[in-house]
Image (cartoon, rainbow, N blue to C red; front, side, top):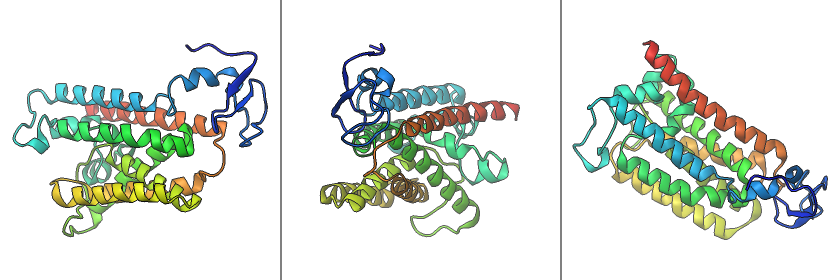
Length: 282
């Protein structure tokens, strides 16, 4: 599957029209190196999101399983919302964010790692389901590279706001900063923000309607489900919206966006490893 095509035509990775394998620029959308030097067919075989969804789901499941193992029997089973929840010690070890890790222990990198951790069976199931729904849709609008950038930036924004709120802001009704906070929902909220940004930038009523229906779902969940980190959702949504506007979905995705996306994913995985190494030191 991963063989380079050296001659003939390939499909532009941005707009989907046929271009020459060695063309410098796509005649339709203006993307530079639209055939990715002959590697475009191999990447397109991974899907529109270039395999991002399987990567996220697989990585989150592996990290969740390791957290359960390191919990050493201290696994919460008392309620449906906390069923199969790893211990607080295990979540801290693998990179939970929040006011305690960030401000008391100086683990600032956990704003990157926390999005790969989950606090229970229902938590990981619904977050992975939402990722499966929203990531390909966002990749259709922005391209896979910019989608990954938005996903990671939104997670950082969400957990930064939640950690700061947990340290400095008073609790107000459903708004309460996280002392310990984990989950992919901050990044997922960012994908919703990106779809709304596309609707505003392009004038697409369908994109705006789809995004707002997801915003309403987030708000309902924030009211009804205990333990929801609404600061992380709001920060993720805002971060995703602003990142999406800066990346401008009406312009073609560039090769450097893919390179930045790979860097974002590498930094995220390294942050989990750094958390474990730092946690074992304690």
